[in-house]
Length: 499
Image (cartoon, rainbow, N blue to C red):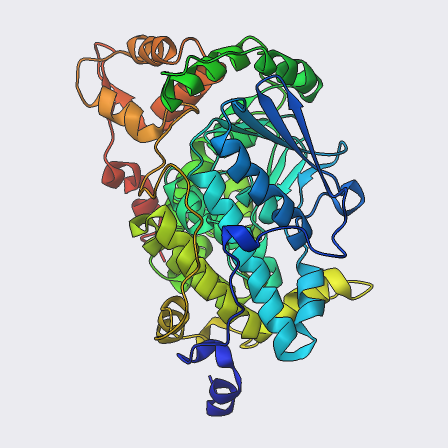
């Protein structure tokens, strides 16, 4: 990067930016001018519902909404009458399409005070996300419709996340010169294989049942069933001595009552050869390495690689070339470091990083080009290429400056953790691997084991069979042998010897 750009770009400075005064729990309350109806709350026996009510804005989250939700959650946490918290979005299009970043950028344009207010919004949003992630009662999110950005933060840290045929999931931050926030540093790298890195860098969308297969959602039902499910959940009664895992198991069994089958016209997308290609291409430790791997994938011999995989690699290369170079480098580093962060540290670090991006030209340019200008235009990134963003620059961005105030996290009954404490979704690949590696297992035995373990849950058979198809070979007696990563990649290495 030219020296002048280094000097004028405060994102690459270790100086602590001025931060807004953070709100403690006693300060988080509605303010004059807040829309009184942007969030609707209701009680039905033991269920407490939160309905995001900005359907014309696709229920995008703003500070007014966060200021309403946080006090309610803290209040319900203490109430013996509140058994289950359920969050949803108004209208058929969206659960929550993200944070209202256009309003944030316009606010940021109002000088230093506007920038402090914008940073304060991120602090408020991350405080809300953290309360959800550590909430001591069952919290259920209906991902019915568009679920992106800020909407992901309201849902993915919940122990129970229900997708429908209308779900559209994405983390689109690299398209607007930002980074995968709202706890994306924690959630994404804990997805299987390299799926989190793939979704973080490309902003790829997962629709309908594929959000369930990928582990973004824990359950899948038809959207028409949601009102009946809500009514049934309201009938549940818990014993005072029942702990959270027991209550979640009861809810899980209740959701199973409403299984309507899987939409078989929608095959598992991130599976088979595509999943192998994602794991191969998004394994390198640098963005350049990923792009090299994609380039090699796009040129592989037709006999060893289907044409649709070569086409996918070409499209993905083009996608990455359109993303903010700074965002790409930061997002990849998040995926690498986030596995070592606790849930508390995740939000503290993301708060610091959000302040840096508010000072970075790419965030303003990305939001302005894609969301504010009419018609939308292609952003002009600064720096314009990966060569202009060094690994040292990214290290500085991800390191909180000396003296910077940490995000003040609100206390809940559950503290921080380094792995999600509840796995309510489909069996994870590493769990299947552990069972197969015990030895002496046939395919039918493995499938039946997990069906029994998950009480014949919807999607278990499809998920386990896909894992076995992709990761195992069979001996003559039909016994499964788990392939090592090196064995899975052997064909790819052979195919790449010509490059």
